[in-house]
Length: 314
Image (tube, rainbow, N blue to C red; front, side, top):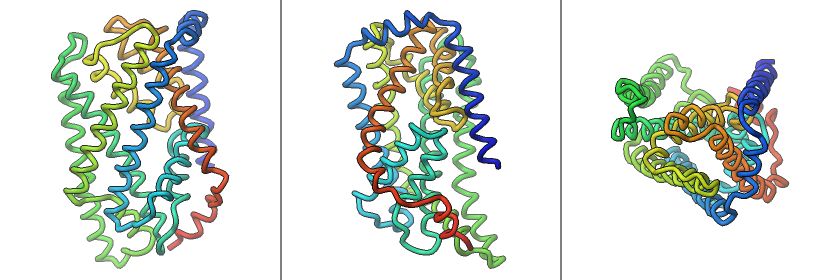
């Protein structure tokens, strides 16, 4: 029931945002910019997106290795591509994250719960790194329209959340152990969050490179639309655009990416039409890349959600 309500809300949010945003721009002007966009630059942006996904697979493998998961690389890539496909053609990112865990081979009792925990940890870690990039960029560049306390508050918030994520699983596992609840699915979920400093540092470095590539991908897309933006503006705006659109609040970030792009870029002189065109091209690239990858592997996808629930009962 909750899942049905959640999907209904996402569809509603998506439709409302699309109607509000697209009613305030010239659709003819937007489509004209997209149609006459430089195809070579769009192709290059697609290459950047694909490279970023490769780095994301490497990062997830670090999280999996932290729970001693030795899944072969081919199965890992297959699971990730399935997750990308469901993210793009499903309702929000949660479905894709679950599909990624479902399509991994189960190694032991509660194994998929541990894998799902690494997916969640990967998602949360990526968002924290992304927000940190944007906040630090705001501090270094200091645009006049943004009060100093906002980026500083964001950095402090990221630090506090990171500390909570590092400390809470350890305290929780100890408490559960004392009450003899430390078994099965609960044990898997707790152990799925890495606490090894080396793993976290490596994952952070890979994530920094991944998000930097995505920021430059945005720069390329704006150039393809004959409206180039400087790298500084991209670093202080695109991280927040990507972070907001990654949240499971609408269908594949539709409406949210456009709204946040307009909000973040308008103070710097980028028109709403250009911002919405950028969001449309970004979605087009993601859809094409995810569609190609997903269609290659989804025909072998045989694990159902009911099976996942059955396998992970205590």
